[in-house]
Image (tube, rainbow, N blue to C red; front, side, top):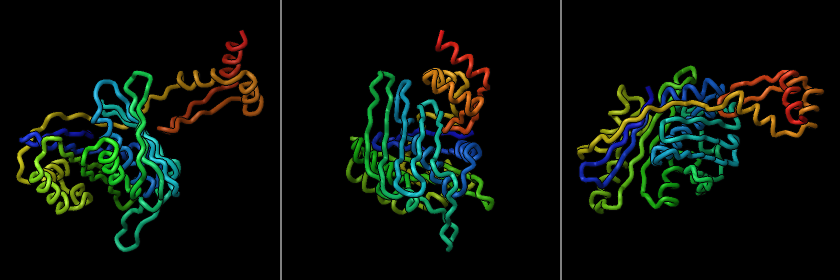
Amino acid sequence: MDKIIKTISENGAFRAYVLDCTETVRTAQQKHHTLASSTVALGRALIANQILAANQKGDSQVTLKIIGEGAFGHIISIADNKGNVKGYIQNTGLNLKKTANGQIIVGPLMGNGHFVVITDYGTGKPYTSTTPLISGEIGEDLAYYFTESEQTPSAIGLNVLLNDEDCVQVAGGFMLQALPNAAEADIARFEKRIQEMPSISSLLASENHIEALLAAVYGDDNYKRLAETELRFTCDCSRQRFTNALRTLAAAELRDMLKEDRGAEIVCQFCGQKYNFTEKDLEEIINDKTE
């Protein structure tokens, strides 16, 4: 079971989230048939958006757009604070590794671009905030977003580890934020700990990576566990939703579709689910529009 655990330091000066997103990213890889580099990039984006959404209250929904100018193209994800996330990457077929240690290449394939966060509070007026990509590694870009857009100094670590068959072995990460009442001495101590902590990859490779992440973040500082929420990759697409989309097309467009393709196949970008509409289905939609 994937989960996010929210914690706060005993003195109330820091908060940290730790996440296990293994099944979430594994499902994304299976649905989109991504190769190694594309899997890691998409997985990091999903983890990043689960962190963003966990910061929200009520029925808010967060859309994360990582708009890169490199080979990956764009990565789009939508998440809510109930643990649901979905997403896709434009180029699913990138599979590049550094020869020395087999490390997956991500940043150079993302290139320059923008980190765009759109928060929908359900009021009909979504709030959009954009920061530049500073590395394309996604974790660093999320930390920069928090610091620049939300004025919240943050440390982020997230990654996706693959097995010898390039399937998802483990995925997850952490976020640490200093709260307004944090003393300079405490901030300095936490900064030193983060700088000296093991790599996120080695922590995720631990037998119990959730506890390893918490121990690395807090060290000897006491903390409280505030909440634990399940996480999952899930898509709310449906045949009815795509039927409604077809109804928005002009009758002439539907007739061309009927004549040329004798039906229609619509594939959901977020999960790869295919919906087939027969000639009869299209005829019914056309008849409804012309009545």
